[in-house]
Image (cartoon, rainbow, N blue to C red; front, side):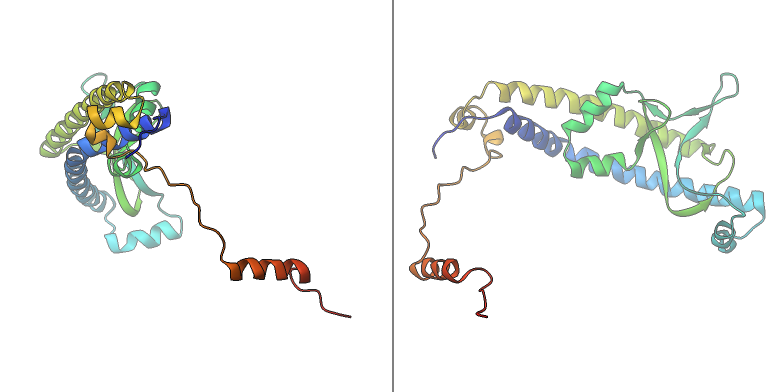
Length: 232
């Protein structure tokens, strides 16, 4: 296979795809755990809402429809804070640069699975969120988690996500360093075969000539016009 120069865009694409491949298993596991936590949260939310309102869940859609209840689909999760009696969001601290950079390190597919459970709110930090999947009546402080077991599992997930972000950055930077030393496809195939597998395959120049019949047809269309001009 002939060699060819490797562009900056090629390196960026390969680094992104390799990083996503490396963390795919952990992202899948985090997403599965987040979905499990999400179901538990909404189950508890519904239980608290029924107890507080005295309205059965079968009536909720109608109350939302006629405007007697405000609807909510997604909630940022909070815990009851010990300082000043304030609620504190479950937060993965990221600067604007780090958060944007992190998104650029992962493919759309992997980002979609991970960021389903993460969002921004009032800052550049990322927050754990719960997705109902349907319209639910909004409840004051309904997004404050109080169950000890659920709190412990959310804390563990939060730490797992932070560790993942750190691993993503480290792996991506190391991969970019290796790729930066490869200026040609030949160099990459020799130094980093796994990266070379993701190089675009150069297309051979086309040398096929139009068939005689097609050339004659085009010539005829040129003579008669397109569409053909009808005689008056």
